[in-house]
Image 1 (tube, rainbow, N blue to C red):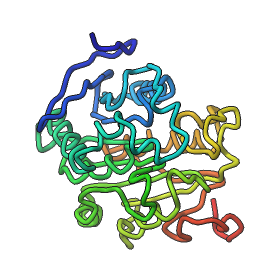
Image 2 (image 1 turned 45 degrees about the vertical axis):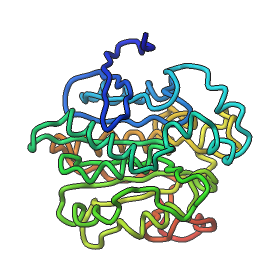
Image 3 (image 1 turned 90 degrees about the vertical axis):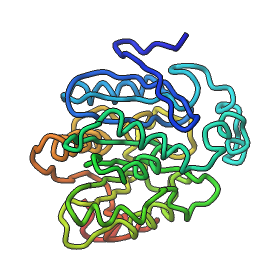
Length: 292
């Protein structure tokens, strides 16, 4: 029997031999929310509920483990290499990243069958690149990647299947993208985010693509599982007005409102964050002028 998430309904979704359970809640424009490692956690559900409270319908596929379950394979991994060779990780990514991206694209088409529909998608950690890959679907009007982390052992690879198809959508106004990470996060390295930024920045199109790198000192210090801050809007979120991580979450909600419900385009005013498209995503940019 499938694990329950209080307040959520669920349904199985299969495509091309891959099946996962999808949890859903709320009414309104659709947001597909790809959780982080190792499974759907209480912190992920809290963010999903924030989207629901803002008037969206959330679709939360369970891609690894069981919601709220113990993940001994993840907890026992001491290095990135350990994660890569685990049976659970191979089961999800063993057919290549494009295989899961195709499953997510099919989920997009399932939740928004009409050409006039508008869908948002957000991916955390390993899901960041998959969210951008699924944004090749015409109904996806807004995509967010937080701390994109795959491929784990190649920090220069964007991890985005179909990235070459996204600039035309951005230039045409059919899509907008936001990307966030913490400074000095080795799991979401600056090289990857810098390459994604270089590929997707479209000069002259206001609001089409924005990426921000947050000062690591703006992370919640009480979460110490990782050696460096990593999870911008979940485990390392500081749930207080004016805090940079809370500003990111508030911006994401306003971003989806703009793109999916024709709201106002939100300003990207986040304290202690570097603009990756202006300065690149690397160490040493914190003292340069013009940082917000």
